Length: 369
Image (cartoon, rainbow, N blue to C red; front, side, top):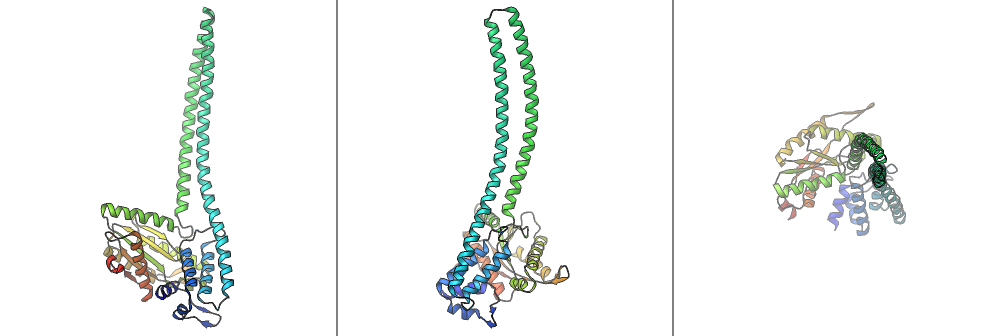
């Protein structure tokens, strides 16, 4: 019990200084009961799977969750009932806004399809009107036949032929216009659907893929590995002391650092099928198809050198930061969750042993033992 609690507290990477006294994580761990530890764990999971909305931008949510986490770990900051009240209040309002965001996105999808269905309906109705007019002219021709009048039959025959030819010409012209309009509409619908799907898959701040996309891509590569045995390696990247960057410079600079980090990742991992995603606040996951561990190491070393030597300039401010990395190659018969867990543990080892470095994950059999 205490081991996983200590590991959780350490992973939060929080500066435990408040109100003039220092809270040591090991001492805090001893005082942390199982109920608070469970709530802390749930907050940590929520932190890693946030859906960003207009009312709840990512940095605002992270700031609130960090403050709640500190309150749970250090009960001296606020009485338990106040912390629990704030937690319930935040979760309730955030969940409602999250639901509204998802529902609006779904409604946008429905609107796109509905507009297209309306146009198809208009096409069908136009064809039906034309068919009814032809049927009416044909009925008049039949009446002329039954009337036994040669002159009447001649006139009605000529009228029907002229009307039918004119109707077919109008129909062909109308059909061409409708087909052209439908083709444009189909292209518009396709673009809207592609953009809507892209919006669902992209992290709005950094333009990296989001956690949802990572889960889908990881599952796809995992299934491909099971079928064809193609190598695939996972990198887990975390910005070192990111909370201190926010504390010292503000969240705008924190956002700037996140975007610069993604730019650096994209410069190093340039292949079309390299998959860069933001899976947590300052945590990123990179899927490298057709890469073995040793292939990934060369790229990772280049990334570490680039970031540690770079001075990132924002207005008049010069900023330096580093990252820690975990590397895990997917092993035969290894569950998907175990693969991701090994990469996370390798990252944790890098941060625990000095940061600004990478660690190779233990092999699947050793990690399980």
